[in-house]
Each structure stands twice: as structure tokens, then as C-alpha cells.
Image (tube, rainbow, N blue to C red; front, side):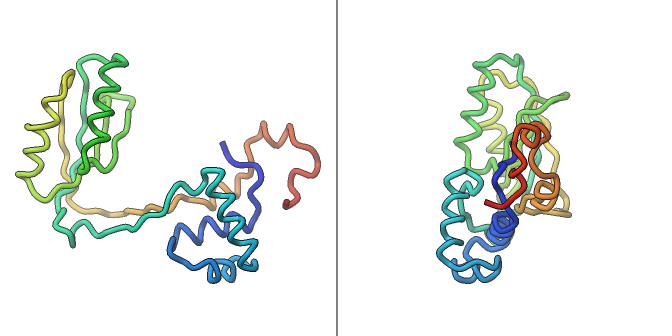
Length: 179
């Protein structure tokens, strides 16, 4: 659900932090036209609300020797709660699993796995993935080229849409005024 009390300055802060999480508070405040103290208070409030989940450093996988990016579709034998939980727990413990999604359609899960080479992928599939109880089918697709990769969310689309219709209807006439 879209937070109701974000104003233009909050959206600017979120966009600036997505672009550069190491920006100093002074530079951030200047960028969003605030003084440092209120800017820092807003950042802390955005963190408290869970809009800022964490700060990370993005590394270059190829420069680190992680040259093989693989998408793996996994189908379970049965889609029962215990099998789903067991699979998800196993995926959460593997560092080479960058992303794991529960899916609709022909596969139950879609994984994005990053490894050094084919031998590492083989070890991951044969020694780990295929040994998880309840696996029905594993299908891998190799990424030949990364055409687009971004970590920044499309804030412009969310900010422009405003709060959900139900929230707008229940709020009073002051709802659109900045707080």
C-alpha cells in the first residue's frame, strides 16, 4: 500500500538515496532543498516506516569472477505448505541464489543464480538443488547478455499516481496539503 503522508521532499529524498546511498546528509539536504536537520529527521522517519529497508553497496559480479548468470525454473512434486517452506528455507541459505520467486504458471519457483563457471553451476544443481526433497523438475536458462539491470524502483510512477483511491476517499479535505 502506498504511504499516504509522503510529500515532494520525501520523494526527492528517496530518489536521491536510490541513486547514491553514500550521499552525505548535507549534500542530500541541499539536493532536496531542506536544511540538514529536517532532512535527517525525514530520512529517519522514512527508515522507521520501512520505506528505506537498508543501504547496500553494489559490486560488479564479472569483476569478481562471477561470470555465469543462470535463471532456473523449479517445479515441485507437490505444492503443499511443507514442501514450499522447505524449498524457500533452502534457497534463503544459499549465497549464489540472488533472487527466488514463487511463481504462477508451469514452474513453482524462478531462481536467479550467479556462479563462477559451469562446474560451479553443476555442483549447485547436482549436489544441492536436486537433493532437496520434493523437487519434480529443474530447467536452466543461461543469460547470454544483460541488457538492463537496475536496482532503483520507479518512484516517478508511484509518486504521480498518488495514494490508493480508497485512502483518498476516506481522508478529509486537508489530505493533499504537505505535513
